[in-house]
Structures are given as C-alpha cells and as structure tokens.
Image 1 (tube, rainbow, N blue to C red):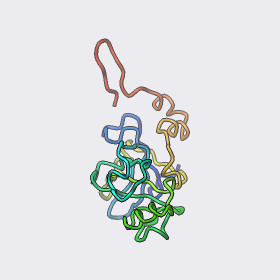
Image 2: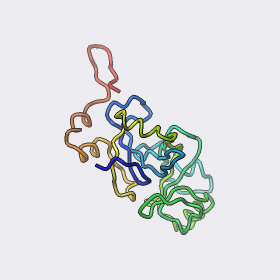
Image 3: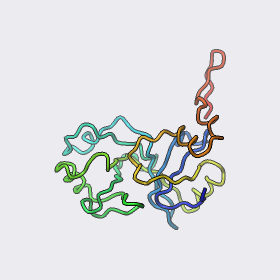
Image 4: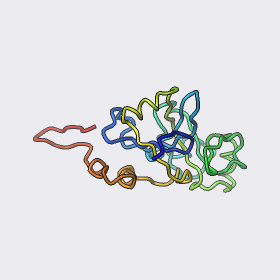
Length: 188
C-alpha cells in the first residue's frame, strides 16, 4: 500500500485509536498541502436532516453526516456537480467539495442535483502541517485508496478493515465494550 496522502485518499482509524472522536471512522481527505490536511468523516451520520439547516429545502430524506470535530456548526458539501455548484474545489475523479450554497439550494429545488451525488457534513477534520504524518507514524491511521465516488455510500468500518487485510478481522469484530462481573470496561 502506498503511504502517501493526497486528495482522494481515505484514512481508516485503527482499532482502539486513543482519540474517541475518531473511533471506527473513515475519513476522505479533500485537501493536503503545505498548510495541512482537511478531510470529512464519511461513515458517521447525524440525526439532523438538511431541511432543518437550510429552510429553503423541502426534501425530508437527506441526512447530514458528522464531518469531524472542527467547526461543528458549519455545513460542508461533497458533490459531483462542478458545472452547477460554482467555486467548488476538485478532489479527484469528478468529485468536488465546497461551492456556493445558493447553487446547491437552487439545484436541489430544481431537481438538477440528486441526493446520491451530494453529501452534507457538519464539521470537518483538520490537521496542521506534519500532524497527520505523525499520527500515521504513531499507528493511529491506515492509509487506503477507494473510488472517490463512494463518498456517499454506506461503508462499514469493520468490513473495510477486513477487506484491506484479513489480519484485522480479530480487531474489526471485537466489541467496543465488554462486561466483566457487574461492571463495564470500555476497550477504546
């Protein structure tokens, strides 16, 4: 497996990662340069729906994902509509992030944008220069490549770990919490 980070790379949290905010997360890196790294957790949904945030949206079936612990009150977007959503930044393979929210609202209202090709996130993951590399070196993350277009798929952390390496099966299927006697021990 190539060990380089670039837009379109995914980061998979290793079992028992110390920072509980990233327990069993899969993060799509959207930007990586000398200023640091930005990504979104693609496998953690919230209970919030888009129409609760953007009042002009009448669709009631678009869930917002938990993008990460930074700027949790800010809405971010991944999509495949650079011609409709102006000022987007290319990630890789026809997938973009950001852009004008007015274009997003208009595209959804006019049925030009399909919910399978756009994803909304509250918050993001961010690392200062060299911070992510240090975390990878310390063993917190597995670097992997997937089709960038899978950003809106339901990707199971355990299944992806096993797909990458059968040796992770014991970790991927281990419970997060186990009961011993009358108490509970958290394994993360």
